[in-house]
Image (cartoon, rainbow, N blue to C red; front, side):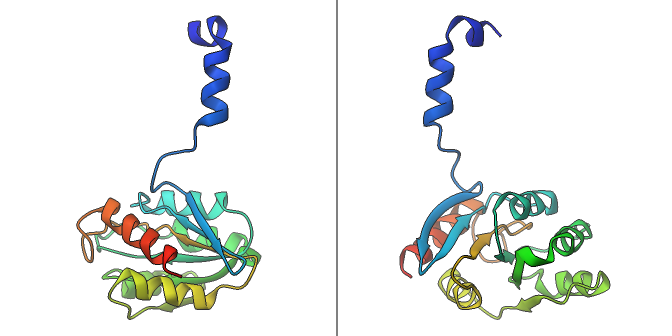
Length: 165
């Protein structure tokens, strides 16, 4: 409270200059009318749902990674709640098959299982699913250990692939 009441200029400076943390719903760039967001830090279902709800408009969600047996029910329920905002879910990594089964159980069929083995191929596949006005959001809901050393490496590889589009 002291800082707010005693130094309003410091508060104003932070609020107007803070751009967020890397790998947390981070806008990367727009290509062909499609916006790309890196949320590689989202290693659990709740974080993936939060990214889906935070990014406006139709989205291609990139979901998947190292299988840890997490309860995934909230993801398809959140996606189904706003069907006009889900262009497609691209399921990647070791968790793709089980995630598809959970989606089917919830009646969510708007997904595609990717056979891509690296981030450039995943990004190209997601880009092909998107339309101008959409967003492509890497918000995996899973740890990265099936394909990457950690979420930072996964995020860097996503960002590099987006830059190469």
